[in-house]
Every structure is written in C-alpha cells, then in structure tokens.
Length: 283
Image (cartoon, rainbow, N blue to C red; front, side, top):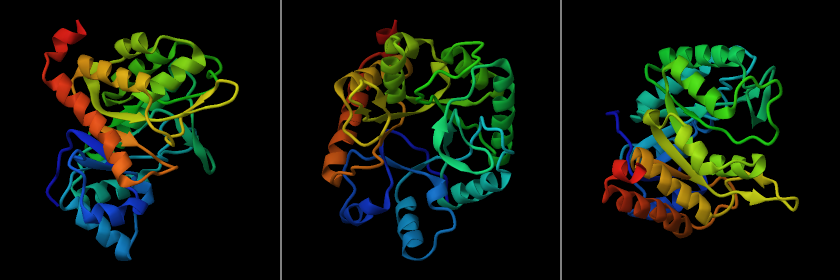
C-alpha cells in the first residue's frame, strides 16, 4: 500500500469503535493510532475492517511490548513482523516506550529503566538495532513511573537526552506522562518540557489519568484530559509546533462523539498555534 504520512489530531483505533466509525469518521480525526501487537496475524472480519480503514486513513504504529530497556534479547522476529505489517498498511511512523516490560515473559506493565550510563548504552544499542530492522528512525516515548529507579547516575531528562542522541532516534512526547510524573515526583512540568530534546519530536500523546485517595496520580488513559494537561500540550506546540497528536483512551471508553469532542480540542489548539509564530511564542 502507498505510504501515508500522519498529521493533525488522531485517535486510538479500537475494535469497539469500528461500528460507529463505519457510519462516519468525525471531521477532526485526521489519523488513527494502532498497537501492532493487537492486530498482527488477525484474519476474517477484523482484518477486512482494518484494511478498509488503512486504505482511506493514515495510521501511526505505537508498540507496547518491545521492551527496549529490558534484559531479555530484543524480539527481532516481532520487529520483522511489524515491518511487514506497516508496509502492508502504508504506515510510516513507529514509536515505542522508553521503558521495559518483560524478561522471561511479558510483565504487562511499563517499568522505568535505571538512569545509568550502562542503561543508556544498552538501550541505545537496542534502539539502533530496531531501527535497522524496521528501516526507519523510531520515536521513543517518555514514560510515567511511580518509584524512582534505583542507582540513578543522572536525572530523567539527562537519561532521555542521552538515549535519543546515542541511538540517533526521535522523541515521542507524552504530555500527560510529564504531568503525572511532575505531581508524583514534585517537579515543574513546564521546566521539564523545555529541557527535553524537542527538536527531535515526531509525535505527541495526550490522555487522562486517575488520582488515588492518597494523591498518587496514575496514568490510566481512562478519563477525560484535564485542563493543566491541555495547557501543557499547548505549551509543547508553542515550542515545537503543532505536530501530529493522538488522544489515548484505553478503558472506560465513551461514545465516539465524546471522544471526537476531545480530539476536537487537540485540533482547535493546533489551529490556534498554527495561526501564530510558535517560535516567537516559545522565546
């Protein structure tokens, strides 16, 4: 299939939304995001549905289980399957989490990588290998975490910068993850944002979260986006431009119209920032 570049505002592609999407894709949804692990090897009606949408709409590919910072050998077979899947459906962007999620088996959680020089070298080497196998530069997403990684030799920003520079890859900027970490670990999210290697940004995520009774903020993707996260998204656009941005919603899935309203907020902010000189706004 002919490659399709993404732009604008997007939404995660979920099976439960397909019946409504078949009746019409809301105007503000410019692209969809898909987790390849959930769709590799499918057949039947689901495969036909996916093909029908990828033929008409751009898709971004966001991995869940590559475990780039993990101790287990890199899953090169999975990467080759993802490469074929992306080519089959004309997808041109692949991103993954700067985290790890398995050793002998899948842990079904995204765990923080120790902020050490050894971890930088280990992770960057695996990212370079993943890029070689996929035939493209990939984006690494800044992750949420709830306990500071032990034995840190640098802070999170220094770690993110070091991995991205050594791997020569791109940044997938998740503004909700910055907000979640800022509350849980007590730092200024705007200052953190400005210190990231934003010139390498290729893609953004925005999402909702849940606040526990004790004040812990959990990155659930199961609630509407709150105003401080919207504000941080607009600040990110002022710094790096209104790059393609996906609304994440992974459970407590509301009606398509409700999701479309939130995607519309992304589109409105993008249009507002695009109407200004974002480089001047960032100065």
